[in-house]
Image (cartoon, rainbow, N blue to C red; front, side, top):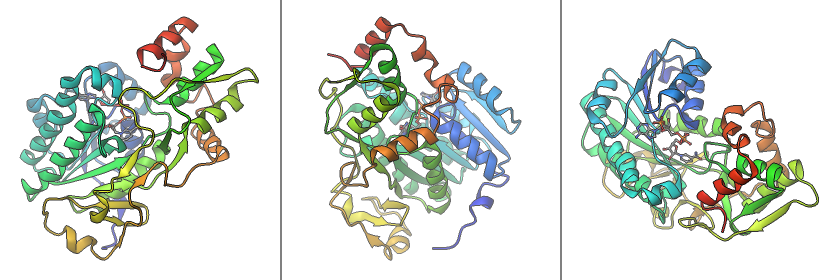
Amino acid sequence: MKKINEKKFFKNSRILITGGTGSWGNELVKQLLKKFDPKEIRIYSRGEHKQVEMRRRFQDERIKYFIGDVRDKERLLLCSKGIDYIFHLAALKHVPVCEMNPWEAVSTNIIGTQNVIEAAIENKVKKVVDVSTDKAVDPFNLYGVTKACGEKIIIAGNNISKKTRFVCIRGGNVLGTNGSVIPLFKEQIEKLNEITITDEQMSRFLMRVEDAIKLVLHATTHSIGGEVFVMKMSACKIIDLAKVMIDRFGNDRTKIRNIGIRPGEKLYEVLVSRYEVPRAFDLGKYFVILPQIPISGLDERYNKYWRLQYQEFNSNNTMQLSRTEIEDLIENDGWFDNQIHKEAIEYLRNLSKDELKNFFKLEGWQK
Ligand SMILES: NC(=O)c1ccc[n+]([C@@H]2O[C@H](COP(=O)([O-])OP(=O)(O)OC[C@H]3O[C@@H](n4cnc5c(N)ncnc54)[C@H](OP(=O)(O)O)[C@@H]3O)[C@@H](O)[C@H]2O)c1
């Protein structure tokens, strides 16, 4: 593979990030500004509040903020004029929310993605990077189904345009992102002295957002278009995560309450399915899955790599994090410190005991 100078890749380029105000978006902006010297980063999202907060946090004139919905193609067309690279992060991503509002999930995650593709092609964007999830593999809930459709239409975009290349990057759970379980566990222990878990056998991929974004950027610079890059991630049993949180914040009386699997949840997550294995290659930091449809250049590029040595790659057969490793990961990412992720946990901290119980019920966490 040709040696690529990652640092030069985005130098003086114009980048659009849909969903740029979210957990991945904030970290992506941080790393782009720190290491890659882009000319301009456009943030495209709906909520003004999150944009104002982000503007205050970064205080960088290279970042421009645009209110817009990915469902609105006209607005996307306008905001992607002159853009070199698009990172498509905007999504509805809470499993229960997508289940309860199926058409909203379809409109944002599928139609929104198609709008991004069309706007990119019309504006001759060089590359579009779609961030997908383990839940898109053998999908079982609507969030996963919509993200799987997103992957398919993104990859097929390569056959509509010669100029714009489309790539997909699939990751598992990122530590402490919006809606993740770590701040919730902490609050449960402090207010209710218990943790609710859905099943003792449940495992999940786990990674720091900082590392996830490094992989996103590496895959972006090294892809030719048409690949699904899969992050090689470690995983942990949720029960071990719960025990780490109890060791830190709980006491002898802290209970773990087993409430059974939630609607739409799997016991373990899969990042490369058994059906994808015949088309999957091992590139060291990643697996690359080639599409079922022909896209020129891909076979020649990847045929020299090792084939995947798993029947499928899932959160049970990947490297399992020990309790000490889980603890280090949480500690290093600042999740034991109330000050570091203040904004992410503030709304939970303000809830009373009853409100917190109710919150978990509404999220489908309590029977
Ligand atoms: N978090 C994880 O562990 C994880 C793992 C794998 C993959 N992913 C994927 O990574 C991406 C980013 O995840 P995240 O954790 O950063 O999510 P997040 O924190 O919930 O952020 C979502 C972003 O999308 C924006 N958004 C939502 N609907 C939109 C719409 N219709 N039009 C424009 N913007 C919209 C949100 O802002 P507004 O609401 O203000 O519009 C926000 O900026 C998602 O595609 C997700 O599927 C996440």
